[in-house]
Image 1 (cartoon, rainbow, N blue to C red):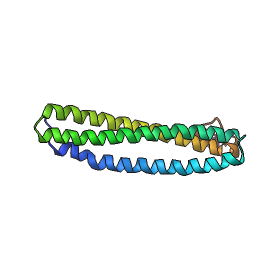
Image 2: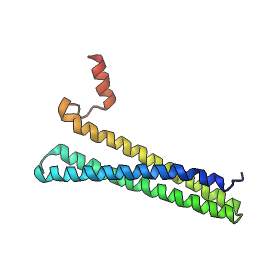
Image 3: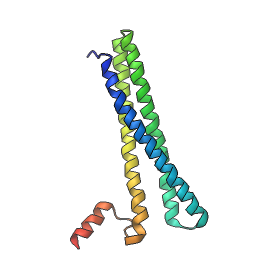
Image 4: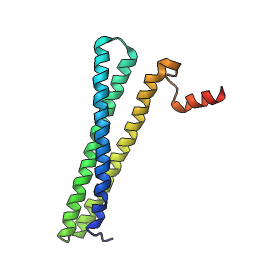
Length: 146
C-alpha cells in the first residue's frame, strides 16, 4: 500500500485534540491531588482517603503513559511524512504503522484511566449509601429493583 504525505497528516488534528484532552485530565488530577493533600494533613487516619490517594497515584501514572504514547505517535507521524517526502515509502509505511500502534496504546491507557476515575467516584460516594464494593451498574440495578 502506498501512502501519500496527506495520510499521516490526517492524524495531526486527532492527536492534537487527544493530547489537549490528556492535558486537561492531568490538570484535573493536580487539583484533586492538592485537595487530597489538604485532607490528608487534617486527618491522616482516614482509610477512604488512603484508598483515594492510591487510586490517584495510579491515575497519574496512566496519564503520564498516555501523554507519552500520544507524543511518540505525533513524532512518528512527522517522521513518516519526512520519509514520504524523501520517497522512502517502505520506511514511511512502517513508521506510520508504528504511529498508529502508539496512538492506539495511548487510547487504551486513556480508557483504563477513565475506569480508575469512575472507581474514585465510587469510593467518594461509598460512605453516603454504603455501596463501597458495589459497582455503579450494581447500584443502578438495586435502585431499579426498589
